[in-house]
Image (cartoon, rainbow, N blue to C red; front, top):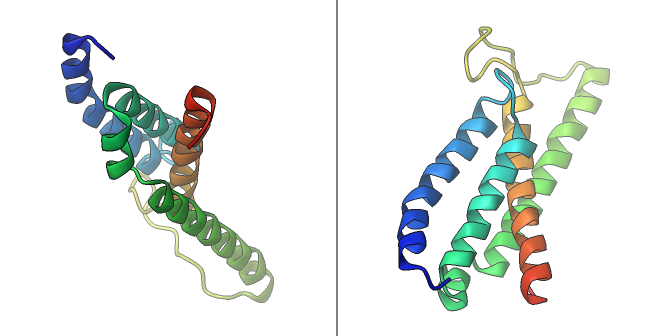
Length: 137
């Protein structure tokens, strides 16, 4: 990107966009949103970051190996937690208790699942953009 004005404005806006994406993920069980919506917002901020900065800087801040490990760990965590809830319900195993309605920790396993989905979606959106934009991740 050659516009210095646009670059500086986006350097200011990208962290705000990421904070909003985190907010959408964390409060997805209390208001509209959730892991998919918040992950898409954070993925869009990664795309803007890649458009504003050169490839070497982006690869140092968002290395492929680190992003892939985060995505794989989130997928494994999601699968294990969902599997535990499916099995735990049948065998009456202890699960994350429900809290007071309206609090951030009020929905049992929905919050950790939203966080895992948000990480997966954000990285997938960024990888798809990278793949289609430059032909490589």
